[in-house]
Length: 435
Ligand SMILES: *[C@@H]1O[C@H](CO)[C@@H](O)[C@H](O)[C@H]1NC(C)=O
Ligand SMILES: *[C@@H]1O[C@H](CO)[C@@H](O)[C@H](O)[C@H]1NC(C)=O
Image (cartoon, rainbow, N blue to C red):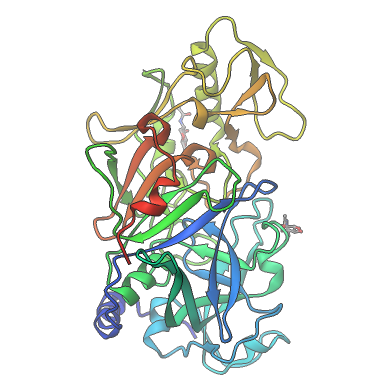
């Protein structure tokens, strides 16, 4: 049975806001670590009864907390979401479970709320999606007490998440990872559920560190304090791609799409087929931001044009070299360091006049050896992405930048490289408001 409750979601959300406990927190922090082998960004939360630490891969556009409930999920407080409940409506169900779909236990709950999920980590397979059972359990996040320096925790007793089988989380994730921390725009993704539970604004700041040192990066949910005179962000609206999930019905995507109007290299406009920068009738095209792609992926003709412009703008002393085997890059060089001021800047130009986000050397190039650097963008030719966005801004390009995702005002803010502001992501561990 298909459920169609879409339009009542906002009303139900309002009810949940009113009924949730007002805990008067203004922000919550999750430390983020870059995994050196998969280049994924991981974090962890505590969950279940008794509480256990659960390691997660950060999935910026993900629609929920997605967990492996097959292997080792033990909890006395696990409860499947009933398909007639408000939580199920918010989870955007695809069907109501009325029997056992597989031999595994959690799929057998009567009237369970089923959603469909697909895994963007596996870019080689169009078949990588599954039904999930929406469930509730205790979620707990540690907080440092400002005055004593000790650790306490806050918890949400009925945090909604999606249960998937072990194969779905798969072997494409970093070691020890048991799920995905979805930070998307949906009602059951972490930003909105945490905002509901603790009465803070539906926004979060993301700072991914290029360092693989433990907890160098950070996600701050809610309000964070920052000296706007020292760190100003440029903003662009979040766009809705109405048809981006074509393989799983016509649900609105929870991903963060932004409007990029053109691309400049060293201030010069790159000639592109601009049709590719907007959505077509099937949700292809456009630009989105992703934390599960280590490098920005460009549609093939865009990649070629940007590469050509970039190579032309390099100093004459720089020579091209063959990319090292296994590296995803199309073009590499000798004679320039990624942090050099001579690396051509790449601008993503937004529709509002004179608003652009500048990508500097350390974010545009990748140092692959002492003397070899590569253009840190990937040609999308061989990746059957779902859906085929023309520009997928990946991890390397947003590292050591502060990004603010404001769901209430529906906009994304970019700081550009923090090194220009003499700061790092570590700064934001202490910049959040007192909890
Ligand atoms: C991607 O999916 C395919 C088909 O389901 C599977 O064979 C492959 O092992 C998966 N790759 C990864 C890295 O999980
Ligand atoms: C531009 O891209 C669109 C979408 O892929 C395509 O239909 C069109 O033919 C392209 N135009 C040119 C001039 O290549």
